[in-house]
Length: 557
Image 1 (cartoon, rainbow, N blue to C red):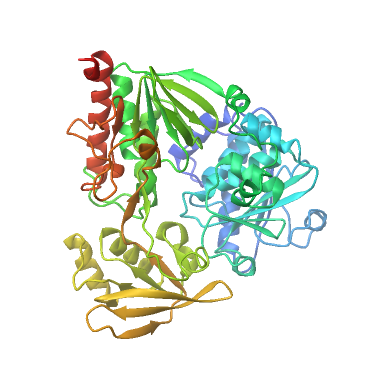
Image 2: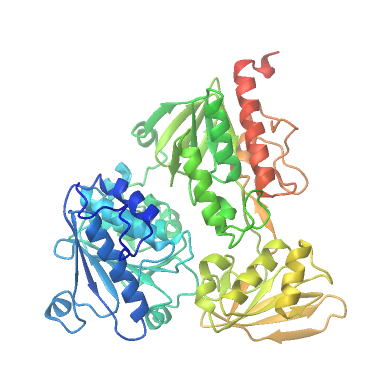
């Protein structure tokens, strides 16, 4: 690959900063085949987004002789030929496949855009063998639209699921990344209230980031995996738990398997590798865990203020220098013996020890309407879904650091926020409390949500009750964000017989050992303060304990 123009050039007509251009130049060295970018800009409401996309693509054109960029008018013959109906639309190799961005690939979606270029140029879908085998059974067309927001860290992964399928089966699968804020009418038509929101063939809907194999299964069947499992009709994987299936999985031996790629897991990977252990980090979902969803982190040493996703990107990049991180690989079963066998959806890892850094998930209110309105007015991630509520009214249930951080984030986006808190004082850091007071955010003290009113499966308002006098009231809002704490992810721990404390967190000693030999735990899953810095400390301690115990097994003494 020979750049058309020096990415380090000091010419002032570049759109991308010099450091970004130099990073892209390194990535583009792997380009093999030609990639055509064709933009159909908007001269109206989305004009600024069109201009951004044009400048971005023009720079990419200049950086590589394997990338070409052209623009076409909205009423051009080319637009009619490709049936372009939304603007801006950016097509990638439209003569051979259907992969499109409806809206500018800004924010988190820029990562999906660059990855798509790389995959298309290399001519590889990068699917697992299981997914590839399943897709070969597809004999019908599938039209996949993934609705996204610029600040959602889950969205790129979900769209790349669709991209990989479109590359693998270009005559069967069409993939579109739809920016919800730039295409509000389309988002409204599909009842998008949380992202990523995936619509397949305009009939079947997925909410959230799906593991690749599940995405492919549901793409084929146009039914949820739960429904398919219930009636025993999972396509191509009816016997996915059978020995012959496990026999076909990749196998490998390591010293330490780390389950979870949050701050604790990533740190443990670094320390384990530096101690001489062969380790691997498995992450079924998003690298960074809950931190990656935090709009702003203000209490991490060395950063006065930093977006949570950016902080976790720095950590993961550092960790990758020491240890492989296998994304989209969820642990299905752990069996102890002379060695510990960790079976995932893609491999069987034989290890001498295992570290559980599985984190926690959002705690639910447990009130009527919460489940049926999820993704249709009920949300748990302000970073992901805040953009959908610009100019609208929402409530936040909670009174801790997360609730107040989310309230301030939404307020800055132009959302009218009311905080609902069951106590008469917040349980948050003082600077957050002062910031909420300064912003003038309304607060309903001593109040709980008793019911989420809904109309046609969509949130229509809240029923409230004052816990002191029992007085009931209503609150008309367009959305509810729930931030009332977390529940530890302890399914694997329970399977192993690991002891939990009275609050449901894994019980560990000062060395992060559990009651089961060779099984360690660190991070939010162990409870306690549940801060980034404590998770990092626990991850390092757990890794060093594993190293010491592998060198001199305490359970044999």
